[in-house]
Length: 187
Image (cartoon, rainbow, N blue to C red; front, top):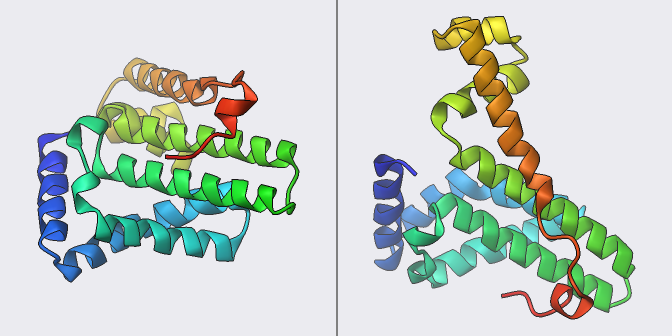
């Protein structure tokens, strides 16, 4: 996390701790789509994702002191909170008989991989993130990316390769978890 990002996170936490409603609005504007998207991926349900989004921002408003910069950026902690709330809601739906245990487990695994991928992308160095953005979101080839980045073609290929290698680790999370741990309480 850059010093500017850390300063922004700490300032935002202070503003929330002082009960500044505008800070919550700013935080919502910045991260609501992230929270809603993560919740929707886990739940596959628009109204459930809306509910989780409200719950997450209510939690942030009520517990501004929960943010700890040693645990990552405010963005990653909000994403983690969204993931936990969505998984908890998904497991409640399973307990109510709405989904099978296999469906729940598959959705949790997929959502966990998506959350890890988001964290990996936001944590990777800016040059790698910029190369991935140009190649995969703006659909430029490595030559065009090199030109835009002002680097050699070899350097652009290296950045893309390294970025993709980092991203591929998103699916390497824990998979063989015993059932009592897997279905234990979500913190």
